[in-house]
Image (tube, protein in one colour):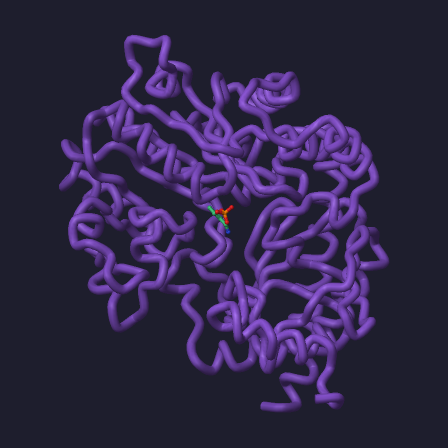
Length: 437
Ligand code: PMP
């Protein structure tokens, strides 16, 4: 056993008590996960003592990287006064006021503990408000693990069916047929086909759920024309429009929706608004949110959760979001543009068959010449997957940790130095791939 690295030894123990040795599949790597010693700013050090720049930021959930001093200070102070109460806290009110002040469509909001829960609550609120059973979502889009939200998330060429009617493909074996029947799947960024599909279910639809830049669909921003058409169609049919901004809220001070001039009925939030702690939230039109309000005649959705709005997540979130002000958003987006331009330059210089999609403080490098616009375009071929894996391994060995899809996520502690390291690692990676053939 002595020849095992500390991470390999830990994984052997993990395999005995955790299915697959992990609590989330995303940490798996060949031949074992890397275990963390500590993280600070934009760097993480593993148990072997190797330090890498972290371009994953816990799947886009950390806007200030690791161990942010302002968050540590605020949370430490709150911890000495208690972490969870069967009473309200001032910080939950102040934090709701702050988030509502960032976006005019956030008239009322409610907190929960994960993005999954936020999507679940938004979908249930839409059903409760409209009295209708169905939801519509884009093919391939990831919205967490609620039965309805995860339909089609794992569609493959063998299962996805014709593009005019993408199939409701279950992710998990055993998903009830009834859940599949109540999810209408449409092709992202394809207005004509999407509206034709929605028309078929107009009377039964509670909401259209859309992520404006869905990661698993290829991190391609939705066209303004597509989103505008969804808004007009849903308003015409009494169907609610729900934005999943669990990831994309980081793109602008008030979320990626700021770039669309379209007002949703509800927005699901999560990730960065927790300041590194578990969180989810649903914000939206007061009339719709009143389905959750026991004092309202509209009240039809009893909702609760033991750790909702716990003062730790509220305090950390408040500190994180106050620090992520307009200048911080602009600076981070400019830094990300610098990285993206650098990588596009490296693609041109090496002639690599690759392209970049994304917006705000995130982008995704595809091993495809043409940037994809929807899930089927973005779906990697076996050869593309092989080349991406080789590129990821190269980046990792060069000290850059990115997400396994090829996505890179930026955090405020980063500077031009880290960006230039990333661009250099991509460039040598593309050159290496070319020489491998
Ligand atoms: N929606 C989107 C767009 C997400 O990316 C995620 C998480 N990756 C979720 C919802 C679910 O969030 P959580 O993991 O906090 O449940």
